[in-house]
Length: 66
Image (tube, rainbow, N blue to C red; front, side, top):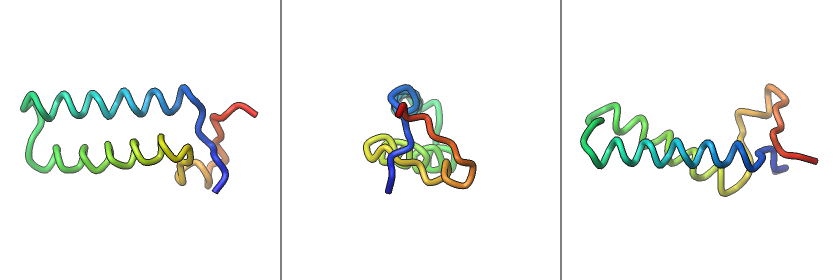
């Protein structure tokens, strides 16, 4: 598994996860929307820590500096 995510990409994903968390804990989102956004947040956190996004492969996207 070759890393394909740069620092800016990871930072943006982490910021989105924080925003989703804030929206959830302030009861702005709930129900099905909260579950869907929670799953997306978990995926963003995992891909940020691993440094690999499988959705980038088919499109040949690589945001990591060489």
